[in-house]
Length: 100
Image (cartoon, rainbow, N blue to C red; front, side):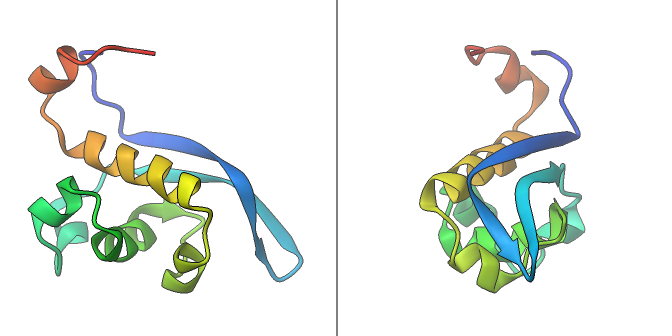
């Protein structure tokens, strides 16, 4: 995995209802530095829930609200958090990781 992806689609275990619309997948894009403002890099790398509730709405499509994230299935939040952390890793680090 030498090329870094700039987007990742997460299929939700538990869909999010927004009005009458059911959201079954979320596309996350690689954050630019500005999307990380107001957070600590260490908190993001630790997958801190508050840090993720700040960053994920800025990089998700459809854009999730903090309330939707707060009510989200923990497995789905974990999957998204792992991808956020992966986006921040250097190519050399990713090259050493096992692939599924």
